[in-house]
Image (cartoon, rainbow, N blue to C red; front, side, top):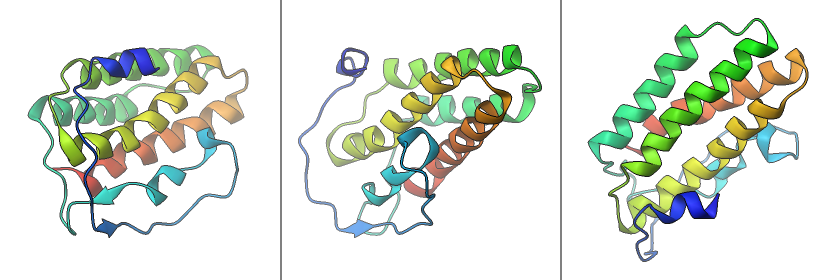
Length: 146
């Protein structure tokens, strides 16, 4: 995972002043919760400016989640593949630097874990739960980035 993200331009971490409080889910496993929301920060109360390519790839993920059927494990596997390709676009097209970049990684790393977990899931029940957590992660992008 670190190798994948190394293509993304790393910037220096700077002080951010506003932390967003959100509802937390209870399972400990990071795939089933969104504890990253405890770490991500806003830009002095405002959304971070993201590059257009990142926002476009996130919109693609939203469209994928909305349109792809997920009734069987094979369909969940296909969902994971499609989401992974969109996620790879975020990584490939990353031009953000500094605190906005750092906070994008706070949002992106747990999403990558969830997509990987969806690829490996063996039950429909678990796949549905992971899909729900992926959707929460993807839709939360709009809370922190514009």
